[in-house]
Amino acid sequence: MGKLYVCGTPIGNLEDVSIRLLKTLRGVDMIACEDTRHSIKLLNRYKIKNKLISYHEHSNPEKESYILEKLRMGGNIALISDAGMPTISDPGESLVRQAIEAGIEVEVIPGPSACTAALAISGLDSSSFIFVGFLPPRAGKRRDILDSLKAEQRTLILYEAPHRLLKTLEDIEAVLGEGRSITVARELTKIHQEVRRGSVRDIKCYYMEHPPRGEICLLIPAPEEEAKAADWDQIMRETIELINSGVDKKEALKMKAHEYKVQKSTIYKMLLDK
Image (cartoon, rainbow, N blue to C red; front, side, top):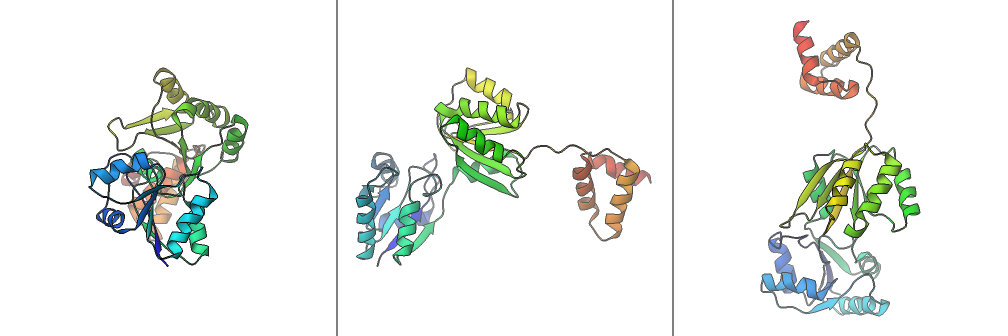
């Protein structure tokens, strides 16, 4: 049997490729891509001549069967999408699953992904997050999903098409509140890259005046917790207890500043004054 290579490709800037990706695209027997007209630009950029076959979400079952048969016969095939990692809000999940069920070896060639790129540049909490992908096109279902995520304490990452952005922002405003902060990362790695941060209301007003274009990621941080009343004597006692128990002083200050929603420098100054 052959091998199926799941390959991440640039999300915009064609220089965001790895040596391993180029070697793989040159060496396989065939490349299954979302849109041959789009993928040929990447191949031409690096002077790669190889057979392309279209494979996308609307491909008929016979196309998938054809690819699997080629793999069974010993052919090596690379799977790519128009941008980023196949199967991540892109075609390929069914093909990968069927290849695994057929005992065909599947190997990943890691590469760019819009969701992780957007998270890295957002400045939001990246220790834990949820990738939601595209919300449903119908407003009712969109709001139902947003409502289910209303109290989520992890950073939310969504994809959205430019023609639906305003409607989605309206739903976020209605369900999560107009003051909820949000980050919009648009056209990442491209010439017109834009990262805009602010309240969902301000972001919505901006895009009402500046119609968006291109690929869009929305990032929503966890809702802000109500700050505990700042009982400074208690804060000092708890901070000192942490330090005496062996917790690093900087970490103890950070923990209590986060818990009580106060400035770490204020706690530090009060410790010096004791």
